[in-house]
Length: 161
Length: 197
Image (cartoon, rainbow over all chains, first blue to last red):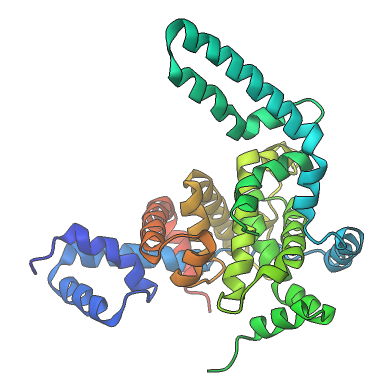
């Protein structure tokens, strides 16, 4: 047995099996495995699971019309350079305004609480409602596509696709 | 080093070459539908999600930079999209149902060349893996699918999930330990499947 704890080496076994360890670390782990039957057994168990997963039947292929349907949809929607941003602009009054109203109402309620109870934590909790997708989804006249746009607000802020 | 052919295509598309985008679509269409299917288990919905992903690829292509792996970038878009789908949970209500009310699982249907034993083993494996995937935390599930079924490297997965390689190593290890636990009851039938060429 080497000085390295078996649990520590176990954490490396999946990466070892996936060929994801650098040469130096791989040598250390393999040296440990030669002296540690427990970790050796764990490597066999994980290796068997990885092999079994390779026998999983493949998901069904796309339907024959998939490509044609996609390019037809692209022709309809593809002229919008930044679809989500454009939708977001269009949503300004339908979603953002109600949200702002909800936030204002929440803030006023919270301010009342602050005045009477000095409970600043309540204000923070209410304002956090703006981040809750469920609140947006609960607005009766917001459709699923609009909810998706709101779900991507963080991505848009960060410039992610 | 030879240039990444995907990067060549995406750069051409950035210059306006629509055929280059179509070539990327044709390369990734099947794996992308398969990837989405791992999350929604419904063929029609998986195709819808894959279409959404390709639309985002099309609209976001101008922002891609050559230093980024195209494959990791596309799977990053797909991962974010499937994660949102999981969080919405719409797929669970939309899953196709068989005549007995059970989910209609195309993977569980026997292939034309499968023996009854192989079909039974494949169906049992499919059910076990689906239950496993649904039990995993979101990021573990994404990392596990990208690694085990899409063949991405740990580095590509880290870029796709916007995290570190060491975090990916941990995510995949924990999911693989869970897989070993989940699949151990199938050890007998699976041993037969593994022996297949």
